[in-house]
Each structure stands twice: as C-alpha cells, then as structure tokens.
Image 1 (cartoon, rainbow, N blue to C red):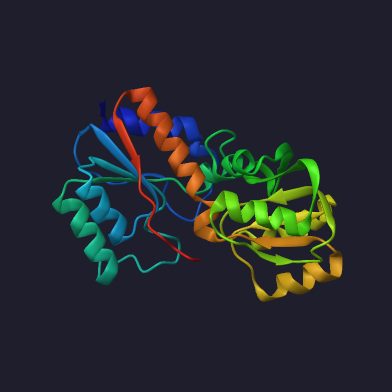
Image 2: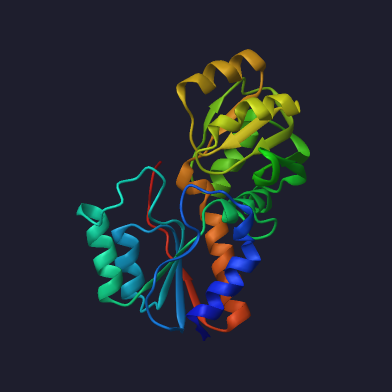
Length: 251
C-alpha cells in the first residue's frame, strides 16, 4: 500500500510534470482516501470508468484524460457534476497525467507504442522541451499494407491508411492521440510514414502531396499503453494492486 501524498510525489517526480505547459492540471485532480491499496488505471475518466473502478474496489483512479481542461466550462454542472460527485461519494482519488505521460521515455504513450509495434526509436520531434513525438525505423522494411495489418493486430483496431499500399516503409514518426498537427514536422524529418490517433481533412491532401504515408489508428487505441504501463510500475514500486480497465472507444 502507499499513502496518497507519497504516490503523488513519486509519480509527479517520475513524469517530471514541472517541465510541461499543459492544457490541464497534471497530478491529483480529486482527493479521496489517504491510503492506496488498489489502483485502477484507464484512458479517460468517464463515468463508466469511475463506476468500473468503484466495482473493482479501487482507492484511486489513474488516467491520461482527466478534467479541468483549458477553455473548458469550469463549473461543476451536468456530466462533470455527476462524475465528480461519484468520486467524492466513494472517496476515490483521481490522478491524471496528460503531456507528461505522452512524453515519458519508458512509460509514456509514444514509448509504449514503439515497444508494442516493434519500432526502433532514433529520436524525438516536436516543440522544444515539450517534444513528445518520436521517430525511428522498422526492424525490417514492410509494405504499407503489411504495416497497416501489423498496427491493426497490435492495437486491436484497423488504422485508416492514406498512401499507396504497395509502397515500402522503412522509417516513420509517431505521436499518440490527436497529434495530426505534427504531420508537417514528420514530413520535414523525411520519414516514410507518420502514425497518430486522429486525422483531419487537410492531412489527406498533405500526405498525398508529400508522399508521406498517414496512419490514423485511433485516439483511444494509441493511448492505452502509457497509463497501463505506469500503473503496473507504480504497483510494483509501492506493492499495491493494480488493474487496467479498458472502456471501449472507437475514436
């Protein structure tokens, strides 16, 4: 077990939250029980995940997508009221880590994507110290259709692929979630392909006109790895129980 302050201090330090200018607060968002015997992790702090964590008898919930986003309505009304009231009623703590969890070199979403897909990491790309994207190469070249099949098998979700299926992919860049705006930076790297979760209309034209293959594998699917890996590590470090709960999301 672990005290909530000890868990928070360790996780904040591990993920170096002080380095990031984020769209939401990272760390403890809702305070619950002072002692943690079981931690449940999941991608988004939806009501379904909260109820699943309560049913699993968790003391704390660890997520990638929490609450209190920049420019979001701050009042605790509607859906947000229901979620927060459920957390308070069960004294369930909510810990949320956004960009710090994307960026971590071991437990981060992009590091876990590399491990899951068997990609060799050559470096990072993005914006300065907050560069959260990664780039690298495949252990062996694959046709684009073969790579799409591999992504679908490993993530359990068939990706949308923009590009010629018979083309050979050697190098690629990737950034989980809604990182389609990283496409021009991936093009500048000179890689063969770019993988993220979501796609916008303009990405199709950019991919076609630059020749960089675009794989949109789902926001949720590309961000399951980080929070699960972090939860497992925290459980091993502190000696409490951990359970990852996947609430299905097709996006």
